[in-house]
Length: 339
Image (cartoon, rainbow, N blue to C red; front, top):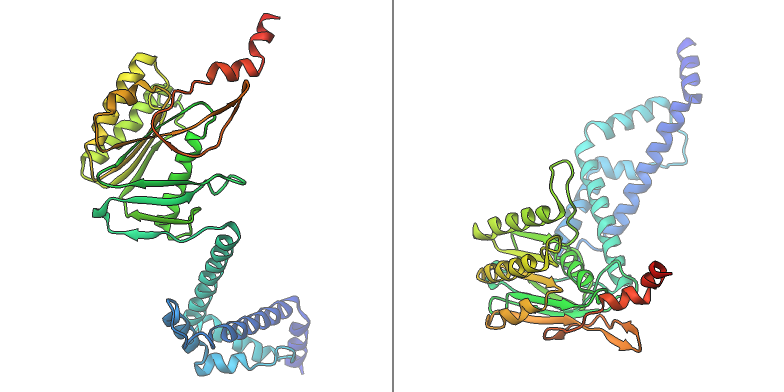
């Protein structure tokens, strides 16, 4: 008959093939998902309720019947169309939940594998009022063979004043703190052996501030604007982590000294915030030594002849290292200019 000829033609059509492949993939996915959650649904753990809810969906009569379909059996167009309608209408909400679960599972497995491979660990979140950030062997997650450092800040020592020569690792350390602090707030593993942090309401940093031609901001003014934004947020009572790398390096030494000293003293009074500032102007540290809530740390340099070596390990105190001209001389710049 004409109807049989039309159905036979449709069966050979590419659309039928795609529909059949889609149904086969769906059934395989549902069965794999059931095999995964079935033994875990009754095991205690943080995801037990989620496993149970997915298992309950998979054992509903319609989905259980669908899972039993022989995927290697040739189906008529009518049967295939019926399954497609069932999946896209009556079972749409259940399938969406299952796909979301698979997506969550994929993320968690990827995160867990990364943590195990890279030596990351989950941080412990603390109430905001405690105002604490403590870590052991914290390192930059994107640096190969990174050197870890210990860090301890709280309400009685909420300011870290960081000094060190060029290339000693100050900026990388501050980036490591900021990245891991952000990862911890997202619930991801952090690049540290252990980490405890009080939940913050924001993170402000001034590490790689650039000028803005569109707004007419010089590098220095862009720094000032960033510091102002942080000051407004801190003054509003928010609990923040504030990090400033080489404050006001876009201006002259005298103004940079005065500005760094004034800003550090000002932020130090906000004991509900944590503040990290690095600078090459070590004289600022001498002027701040009377502040009991400021801890002074530095990234050391070890000289081996005329070649500096950097351990990248924090030490107590304020460094006297000045290697700027040494690096310039080692690169032979003056010889090139005077040749």
